[in-house]
Length: 443
Image (cartoon, rainbow, N blue to C red; front, side, top):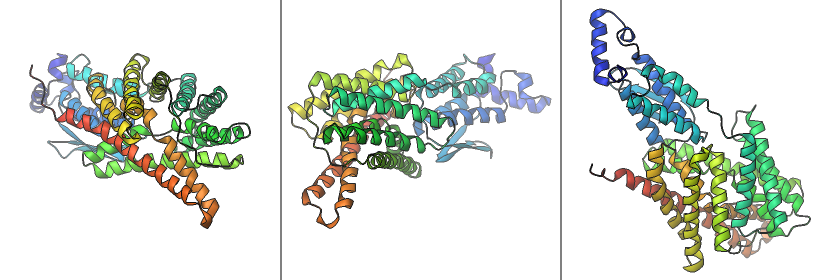
């Protein structure tokens, strides 16, 4: 009976029978949902997916599948700030507030599981609303786990950038852990998501400023920006780039603007922290190469930390860790052995990640941007971004007597950061788009 009541053709027959008998559809079939209830369930599912990091295309597709299972053909129109769920064969729609500000793979996985169960007939359609509500209330990663992996991730990035001094790594880990605890504390009573990265970056800057009294200048710079690197909104950048590639221009620009604003606040918080401690800012030299094994292990630790930030279940962490280590190994070989540039190494590594993760995330119903970014987080050009910011501050303080070397350094760091980000976005998105356009394999 559950399968019959969830079948679209059967629901149409029930509607006609209801018109003839004067009874409600729910009376004829207790598991069936009215059109209004089905529309509410579809809107809730789409809102949860859209708000917690699922790509726009997958959100629209999942809502359509759920609508088909509930007997209502719908079209979801996504915008920044709201979703419009429109019934195709009637002038009926529902507008729900939704901003894609969060990344929570646990909730996305739970919602997709509920949708699959309803579509397969293993979950009664009448239980859709409550099951989706329960999925949306799943807690994020615990605060101790969040703080611990923030420390591990930031220290791992320090190792990748050539900082092997134990004292410096401890300072990086402590700064990132304190920043993570402050972010969780602020999230309890401040709804503005921009405040958290600003405050965490300020803590990183003040820690680095204090370390400047007994650490070399290059180490101080890394102590300052490695904890800031764990704040970079990579999934929002990728989701925005994917929306642009699918010609959802307004939504893509909105996502990238939001991500850019966070990056700007991270840089500002770090620089304010430096200034508050009276540290002298100076652009750091290019990081020295790191031994292969150390580099790959540190990359795996960084992937694990970002998987935790995005509330990835423990059982699923092994896959992005393995992919991230393989990608970093390929990048290391290209740069160290083949003499490739940093943007080229990032492009090849990200294409490898995109190729490996696309079929897996579709099978596991995980948000592509979160999984892919977790695997390539160590490739983000944080070193060049913060070097550019430091150089600009130094340029303002020096004024007209700025040496040409400083201008060259700012331009080089800025262009390198831009090229790496473009290479990463293109490398991750291209395999995704090609997989989606490939014809299905014959049965």
